[in-house]
Image (tube, rainbow over all chains, first blue to last red; front, side, top):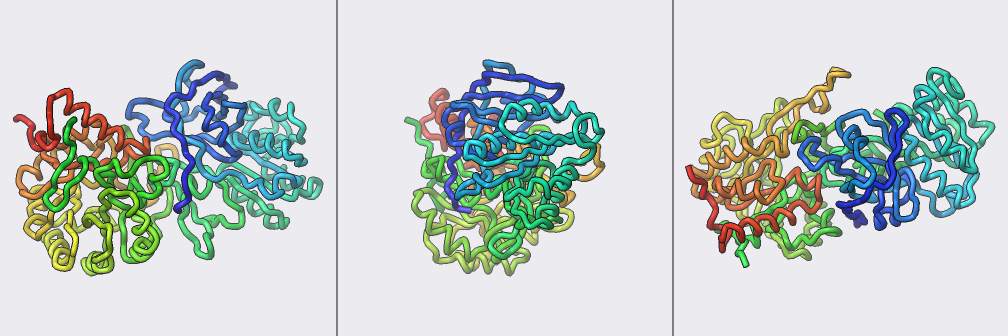
Length: 267
Length: 303
């Protein structure tokens, strides 16, 4: 609770690059201090309007880091993401970051044979993670799942990296037909991962927790939530987590968003 | 150089800006990236006697120019606070207010009794107005007799000044404000959040698991200004105004309506240093208006 926060507020992070695939967007923002401190699995809170609608900042996982810049990847779906999607190169964005505790890849964990699973927009932090794991010398497999082929716009980005990519779509328009968790489970024996990382909606995370538990493999799961502030002040984004013995409503933004799978209580 | 200090009678604040309870953690969370001693003060998150689990998620929902929350006063309890947090807060040379909660009158008294005598407490703020812990948002601040009774009980034992935090979910704020004053409250603070509800039309479920929550943010500001004006017009104790303050101009508006000081809540979520910006903007306002002492504007609205 009393950990010091390394959060930085950058009211004028410059948007230097923007592209989209349908309603999926990638935005690159120059923010040297935040970019340099960022770790995979951490996120930023972006102010998408200087008016009071929408009032709150929006959380975005850090998708990648390139020197003094960081990238976010998101789907425009609501009022906040639609406004952000409308921002142009050259505009400034007010961001807070880096926030939260990311994936734990210290103490040799990052060298292990790793599998990372991203569902839908949950793929966002997996790219940054995969880059760091590759730099540490890990053997990396990435599972990327979505509803249709159009929901896997980052496929080529991952293919350009020195890793194994396995795709799934619910309608079978690309790769395995079905949920990404089904594809992941079917490949467990073949890949025999030593560590599993995942990000996506709660139902998917619960599935991954079940599959990895059954196989006795440690997993780190990045949870999604509505957030009020992103830095622990509002207590809005809780999940039941086993903390030093007791089960507590725990702030995803501050203690997470990444938690060891075996500490998350699925209600 | 404008004099921003305000005198509440029982305490003098460096400036009229206080961070509101439930939006500022226990204060320490904000210490790494802002200078706490620049604040008039801050109110720590509501404390019950024992640690409290809080409500299940979803706990918050955004609404036009506002947000609804039903956190349910999750917190560490009074003993953990006194042992681990309060001693740390002394370092920051600012006024620390303790938001006191209770399931019943007895618990308010137990919390105050436990904290009595500890160093570093400027005053207690009695939270008799949280809409998120009882069914249908019920709280003592909705009834003049219940308000009188709990304030009286706490005043009998308290060794610190007592501020009573009032609910806007009432028909007549004036009678509640007067009850708090008659019971001996040293000040009143208002408003807590407005009981509210939002529904997701896709899932057809309520956006808050608790069904009801408290609405805060700029959306409630005109309602809050009106209630502060009404209360300040009838009581002779200081009024701490709050409800949707996001700028120095908003703070000035509450002071013109009769608030001796203001509390800033939801704005802290959007900008962790919102309070500091607001202090700066109040100072700029005073300079532009040739006001030497900010206290001069209290209750000076022209009608």
